[in-house]
Amino acid sequence: MTAKVKTRIKICGIRSPEEIEIAALYGADAVGFITEVPVESPRKLDSDTAAYLVSRVPETLSSVLVIMPENADTAVGLINKIKPDIVQIHSRLPHLELEIIKEKTGIPIIKTLSVPAQGEASNAGSGNPASVSSLLEEVSLLEEADIVDSILLDTARSEKPGGTGCVHDWALSRRISEETRLPLILAGGLKPENVRGAIRAVSPYAVDTASGVETCGKKDAVKIKSFIEEVRCANAFL
Image 1 (cartoon, rainbow, N blue to C red):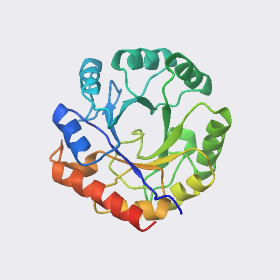
Image 2 (image 1 turned 90 degrees about the vertical axis):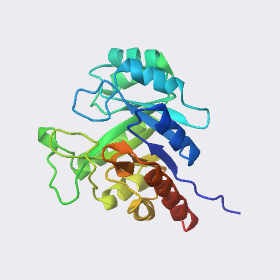
Image 3 (image 1 turned 90 degrees about the horizontal axis):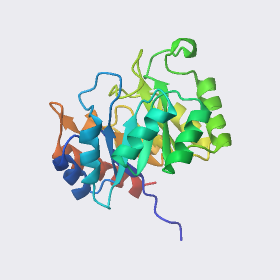
Image 4 (image 1 turned 60 degrees about the horizontal axis):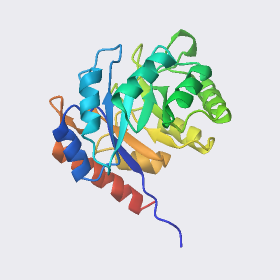
């Protein structure tokens, strides 16, 4: 008998104990804490706040530290202070730096890759989202190096590598998923209204949402519940 598919769910941009409780109540699998990032974000936390919130995460949820470190030492320092279950790296660190993070902390690493917003041309040579060929090459190199545990595809625009709230081309995500053994986490503009279609199109290991479950900049319990229900409905038909 074939085992039931279960797409894991990460609610990102958590900012309070109450939001953690809501995510746990409705059956999310992980919560993300965007910490000390060098870009403007309404969900950005300082390391003290992140450490406090991570300490409040129940065992039913995985805590994910979302960071953009300049080097391995910065990442290791944040991980040791905040003590998450998993770290998500948004910056373009060399493989050697990722290896150092892995060796010194021993926790799973999610590596974020930037994908162009739907309908936008990509330009791999100017810091913009990578081209299809370069994305596939990067995924292949990460897989061969065996230093990350999963990849997360997020939509980028201009100099913002993720957290744009925009959808990207799911056909590209599907292609990457089919060409790698690494678990693929799908992010970028996911919300209750489109997550079922995203799962059917890509069949990701997990889905990630932040602004898609917010109202007026705050996590919305009704939207979180609806998002999780839509994911489970999609799973029922896979």
